Image (cartoon, rainbow, N blue to C red; front, side, top):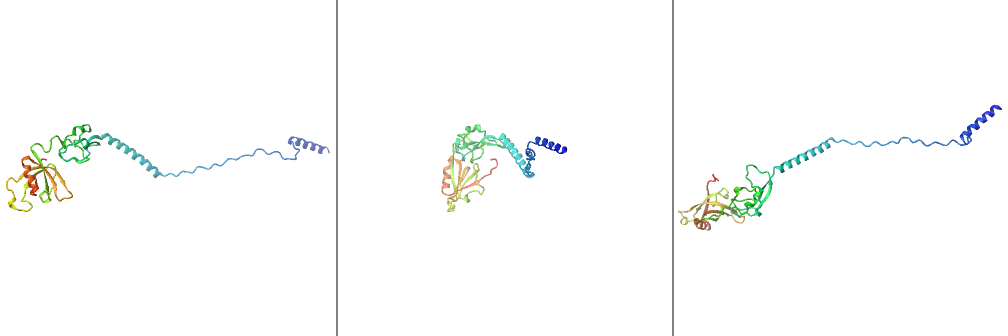
Length: 242
């Protein structure tokens, strides 16, 4: 009996500490949260060739920038021909323009600052549009000068040299028997005159080429008569010394 009472007292003491007399289980504590798994970032695939190509483009861009800088540094402003000017024509301001170039030291170009000085001068030879202007290409002399005349000769192929004529060529105007070939009409004396070519014009509508020649004023009328009768031919003389 005494042992049973002691055991009952121990159980009552234990139940008093639990607070519910053993009828309900003790409250559960806070839930334990385990570590959250984080997905690893995807691994980037390396492309060595693409990276090298990009580096090459960067290097090429840098080299191009350096080349452009050096080219602009060497460029100078000079005078060029905007519109074609034929030999003997007066040069106007509209015929010239300023351009940036890297000229050959052997070419005597005209600095852009001197453009106005060439306005009003005459072309010493045919000046093509886009060409750089040189000092030798202009003159202050009038063509034709005093005591000279310019005569136009409409010539067929057989009355001209096989070599293409150029302004400045020294030629001789020679009388021929004419289209009829009558020897009686051929002037045997004083039928050759020295001349200089000042212009050549080719027509697409005709088989003839018009060659303008500079001759002494006293010979101009006779040369013009030969030309109108189709009795004038041109002989090209040596170009040495030009």
